[in-house]
Image (cartoon, rainbow, N blue to C red):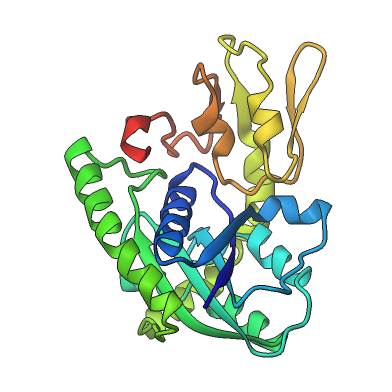
Amino acid sequence: MKKICLYCFSGTGMTRYVADKLVGEFEKHQVAADCFRIEDAESRSVALSGYDAFGIAYPVHAFNAPKIVMDFIKRLPKADGMDTFIIHTCGEDHTINYASSDLLIKRLRKKGYGVFHNKLIEMPCNFVVRHTDERVREILDNANKAIPQTARDVIEQRPFRMRKSLGAKIAAFFGRAEWYGVFIMGKFFAVRKSCVRCGKCADGCPNRNIVMKEKSIGFKWRCGLCMRCLYNCPVNALRVRHPFRFIHVGKWYDPDLFK
């Protein structure tokens, strides 16, 4: 294996952290690797010729791959058994999340991609549940230890599949309702008076759901609940209104931990 293409979707940066580490490990083994953002694939064709393997990295949303990832699969060219691997990140390494890639793999295989490696890597939770700094460091230490082995497994084409329970498959099936429910959820985002109108939320939104107006900021019906806007706001000006205030948001973790 000489060259790998990795497409990554990351909302709050956790999955991108893993993707960048993987690319670094590939290069340590003299394997060239290109990493692209999935949202950028809308503006150009997805070309995979010249690559020996193709990978997708994403965070688990409601026991599934995010809708933006599933839509990305539609734009992939047909393949003839191309070696493909999947890396998904989640706030808890639990069997309930192991079926998140089932539908994704089914659609990839239908287009001719041979998925041989499918692995979950735990990262600090950034949705509802907040970890302590000690727990964050423990999770990152475990991820940093797992990533080099994962890279070697991909390079050497070692199969890896997670055993999925019936409960995980049921959770994934019903969790797909989130793909459409988040459209409504996005309309409950609001901006505090502390907003400095820097435009980072609008520029960084992968679904182009946020628009800068003359005196305010507007939210459309295309939200994917990736929370990139919330976590990237320099003044913590974004919030969630009732009845969804139970979703705790904010800059929970020291960004230096993820450098």
